[in-house]
Length: 69
Image (tube, rainbow, N blue to C red; front, side):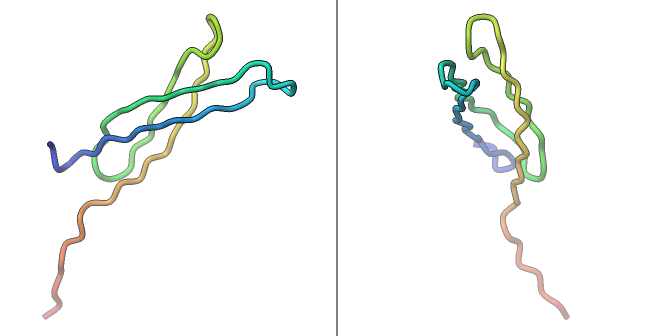
């Protein structure tokens, strides 16, 4: 496994109307590097309609010990 990357799984669902008749459900996995990245997830939620969301991802590298002299 690449130590410079992590796999993120995003799962979510939401009501799309007040009656709750249509639900958006998405489940995606993607690999992102350490640091900051913005991923756009687009998925079909109802027939030919698509839902697109932007997910901010903040990943921090392993702590490195630093010494002051």
